[in-house]
Structures are given as structure tokens and as C-alpha cells.
Length: 79
Length: 279
Image: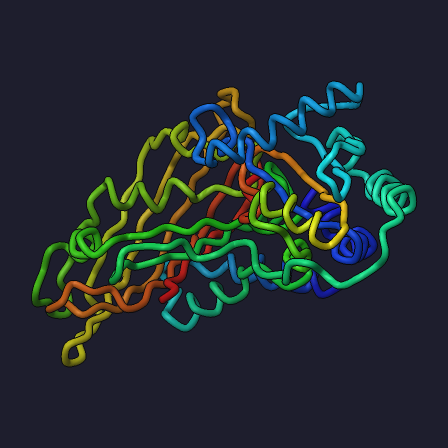
């Protein structure tokens, strides 16, 4: 519901033309477009910085390593 | 994966409570990639162990290694992207390896971090968001960080030591392109060197001067070929831009930037961009 409301607000804001956008309106639109907490749940995972650190911590804490190999940049969503 | 299982509470709890999670970027681990040699060798050893175990191995995969570092299991991303499958793999790993539950070994922190940069640099954070779910992925917004070192800030400000209201200049194409090349929504292709500008411009007009500080309104537009996948498909990202930057003319320092797209479209859908400075 919140997401629908936010998208509706963005679509409404998009109706305002650039010529009408003052500083306050630009700031408001910047705020509205920021990633929201529920869109960054991936950040709730405690990621090791690289494979060697993960292997070291795995031995130290008796835990398996979960490795995901991927194309692009998952940290910024460009993947 | 990020929008799917890696945002699933059960997966997050399993990873934090029983595993040491890590992800790697294939571009960095390629032959000419930036990852250290020891990292590339570590990943290669995992791939070889997977082959030896006759398990699924590939560059976009999930792997589980035992606490000893030995290979345990793997899953192709097409399977792992379904939360049910990934949960089954994780739970089976926990059971068979007899792993006790605990707290995260690494403290969770935002993965999109401001890059290290030269002192006095202007760092911009960009958010791109599909507005209607058409023509682009729309599961979540995507981000970029763009850094302008001090010398480039002077160029952005039209190389002026003093300004008065009404002064106008066009931002050099090389610098406006450096920013505008990221003005596209979430797509599979993120190699901006493949983008081709058909037109682009950013113009600045001083709207106020207050002592040592000034404010410029920035307007412009862009029209850029950007393929959704890596094969050329003729898709165009285009739109108009409006925003403001506060700056100190005498020191050629940009103090604050806020830009948004007015109207922007890509592949039959609409999207929006927000850019703001981070100090």
C-alpha cells in the first residue's frame, strides 16, 4: 500500500514541469526518489568483504560460506 | 537475487545466523579485473572443486563451502533465485554440517558506500527509479556514485571567480556526460562505455548571490542509446533535467547539488532520476 502511494506521489510529481520546479520542489522530489528501507533489505545481511575474509571467518566461527557470484554491481543494484 | 531471495526474511535470517555470506563481482574477478590475484585464485579453486564434485558450476551461481573451506554444494542462479529453492539449500547445509545458530559474524552495513576520493571532491549520489514498471526492471531503485575532483568542479562552474545573478554558462560536454551517462533505469546492461549520446547538455544560470555564496539553476536534456541487454537494441533513454547547485565562486567549490529529471523515458516506460551531493 505504501509503495503504491509513493509511486502515485512520484507520478503526480512528474506532472509538474521543469519550468515550475523550484528548489523546494526539487528537494522534495529528490527525497521521494531515495531508496527506501524495504528496498534495501539486502543490506541487512552481514556480508564479508571478499572470499579470503569469508574463508577465514568460516574457520574461526565454524560456519559455512555462502558465496554468490554475479555480473554487475549488486551493491548499487546495477546488476 | 537481490530483489528476490536476498530480500526474503527467512533467507536473511539463515544467512546471518548460520553462514558467512559473501558476494563477488565477475568483472572484478576476470583476467584483467581489479580483484587481487589471491582472490581470483581462491574463486578458481572453488570452481575447480565444484567441477570435481560434479556439481553445477558457473559465473552466476550460489556456492556453499564447509567451515573448512571445502566445497559442499552449489546452485545455478535460475534455481537459487526462487526463495524456496535457496531456503532448502541453506537449511540442508545447516543440518548436514551441524551448524549452530548465532548472530551475524560480520556486522550488516549499507553495501552502497560513498567511494574514497581526493580531498575537496564533490561526490554525487544518483538514484534511478522506474515509475511505471514498463521498459525496465522495477523491483527496486538503482544507484550510482559520481565523483568530481576539485579541478572538475572549477570546470562545472564555468571557470569563474566571480558571478552575478543572470550569468549563464554551459557545462563542458565531457563533464555533463560523466553525470548523464548514468541517467537510465535498472537494466541488465550497466556498461556505460557502450552508451551513445545523441544529444546532451546542461546549462547553468546564476539565480542568486549572497555574500561569498551563489546559487545556480541547472537545466538540460539528454538523449542516449542504452541497450537493455548487452546486444544493441536501439533503446533510448531520454529526458530533461532541472536542479540547483550552491557554490562558492572564489574557491570554485560546489557546496550542494540537487538535480532531478523532469520527464524521462526508456523502452516504452517512464523513469526518474534524483541526484544529490554527499559531503
